[in-house]
Length: 478
Image (tube, rainbow, N blue to C red; front, side):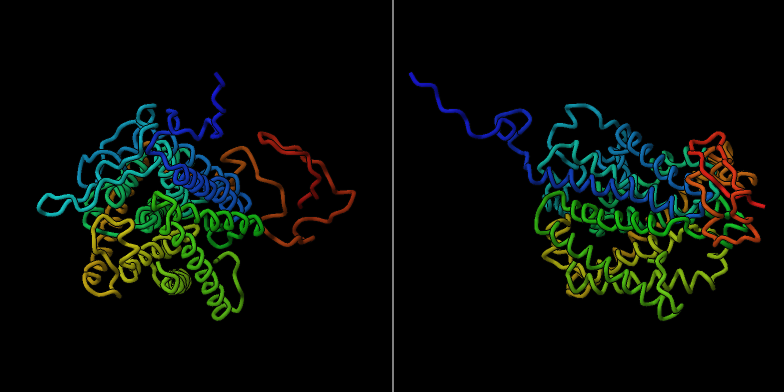
């Protein structure tokens, strides 16, 4: 009897294997893991590079390492307790039950968000529970990188003076008592989710939260040194652009992965994200040229709606940062190092409200639990949607102000929030015993009257102590 012909289908693609269950959609799973990786790259190395280069040279190591630490700390906290607080079973209308997301049985089963089933008033199911066609492991990691980037964005408000030990305590506390509340309320099946507040990809959960919490933390930490506030040039503009570029391109995974599937919604999200970002950058550049005569490098739904939103998201944050900030005494007193309040809180709230205005009904039906949702320009219940967006934004703002304030006050009882005056004066070498690299001053043009004459007679070899550096030739500084 002749042997049966060999199976032409590779082993990994045979549906009878435990590694390929019937519910697994390999395209969706591949896209979700790619999206998670793209979002992760926004943080590491994207924001690590951006933060390490956009600050003064003396804060390069500290700023980059704050981002690196936050990413690592969030990963561990997320899988040990925070994931289920954000996307697990309901504990309170705004919070899920804490628990680990580490067990094999949990991670290899089909992804599901148990609190997302939407019911009509009579108890009938309006929208079934979200059950993407990939394993829980993919969902846990995808949501983890969102949580991580939120903490790193927040860090931009306190660069250049927050005590690193205080930051080490702040990250897990803020993740636990602030981020998880917003994530569950709007994404995991909390009260704002079931009310129909739209947060497609983190306008409220990530951007509004990080901007408001960053401003609040900056208030409690206090300002940078007076010298740093007066002069804080980037130490490497080209690397800064590289980091910003990684941040931009990573947004394809940020917004494209949020439908939880590789469908037309994700395609629209990726295209509109880039249209909106490009329009916003161009508008910001034009405003710089019109009002300040120079194009500053440091300042950098539907297709037609994305252009409008891009124009507004470029102009309104620019206006609040360049005009309102300089005229409002309260904002001047709070030292938000990288202007996270303007670029994320203002932009996030604006995006949420504009979503309530422009949300297209057919696209809403692809991902919202409340049926017949629509933006204000489409009539019907659209006007109510704008009010929902405003109320959702108000909740996120209020919670973050209160929770962040309590966290900062509690930490300060044990660990000073702000660096010592000596550390503020010296920077990285005093805080970490390391320097990023040795250049003249902080972006200064070489001046022989200040830095000495570069000749063979006054060149000397400097060997760093307490730092990992090469032996480099430096002119003697007088």
